[in-house]
Image 1 (cartoon, helix red, strand yellow):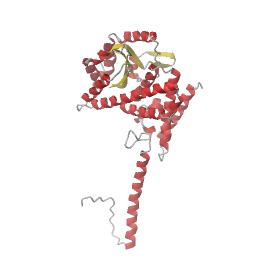
Image 2: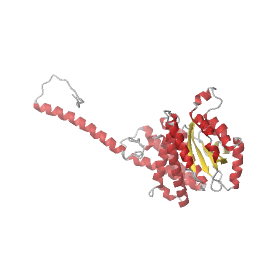
Image 3: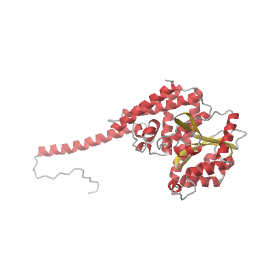
Image 4: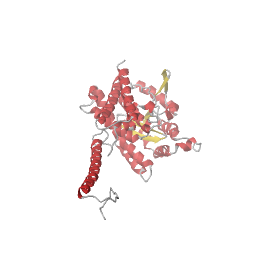
Length: 381
């Protein structure tokens, strides 16, 4: 009959008394009610988890790839904890920064200047989140490309002198392009930085630093400057940009294409913006930046797992702080406090989880050790 749903059915040849019928019906109702209570408890617990603003049924934060990338990068290769995308990592990082900068958050331990710079950088990352979402949809086709480029065009139209725009790139590896428009009277020029902490591309094009052997660090933010803003308005540049984002890396690896996605970025797009070879453009800008008193960009450790989707967000955050004049020491302190905030989200979620399996315990233990290690390094211990 319409609206009738049979959940339990039992066939028996026994003739029950009226009392036995009541007992059997009670057993069925009890099982049904128990399942409803269990489901309601799960729903109630999910509503209290840290990532609830991002998901209808969120996982505990330690099961999210962003948490694994923050604390367990050397240990999560070829595991589900490295599988994510740029826009998702931006969402989680923005949520953690909001909690950190709350009046009761650990960000209150920073100086006023550093806190102000972190607020500005957080807002810029949130704007990048919107473009990254649109890029993810555009790559699937279905006419979404126009929506992405319309959003990019609008963002450039609204870019004020001294403003910053973060452009997502997801060709071969995820990374961020940071466009910093010049202040008046140089508002017709900008600098462009490629923030790429993945081994692909970085080891071939970014500056290496071997002053602390056996570890080799890299300048994960490759910056060129004095770029005419009009070159970023060239439609041909955006055609090549889209080709670089969408061309299958496997075809380039098989030799069917002259350049893969990253080669298109580093060997075509950036030299066009600079009007020179990439090496010469980098060297010229480094000399100009020194004359203008800009702080040198620090060398960083590359990601060891396939977690560049989160790594480029974290490295872009450091780049944005450095370019706002935040000292290296304050940047390190902000990084530690952000890590502390991520760990606090895990402690919060533990209140609403009934049990942990061994893998989850391992992740949390690694996070605790990494947090302690970072704090000891900052304290000189």
